[in-house]
Image (cartoon, rainbow, N blue to C red):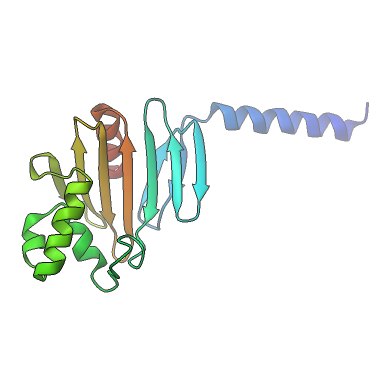
Length: 168
């Protein structure tokens, strides 16, 4: 047998064993936002990435200010508007029409003040909200220009674990 074929076979087996034995995958969303997670499946379509986990599904998109709300261009107000979905104080500082839009958008994502958490983690600001009845939550991460929107469909424990991973 040719030694090159043996070497190629050995390298293939070695690489394959590494890829299947990896406990987590580092997903880099920006230079300061990374997530170490072990998805079973990954799908990508346009601006959306979908990760199938053990008992939940995590989606990510970078908020496009011209398309997040189809009828409104949020350019120049994206971070403020997105944070107002979670933070009533920020919402009250918006023009009335935008505050009303924030309120209705927040309600459409089942974001309620009683289940909302806001944390400043230095390079990122993390907003999260989980709805027990719907078994889904949303996470907003601002990192100095990048506006990242995550949805988690699954139980509260899975949601909390994902939020915790962002904090690491």
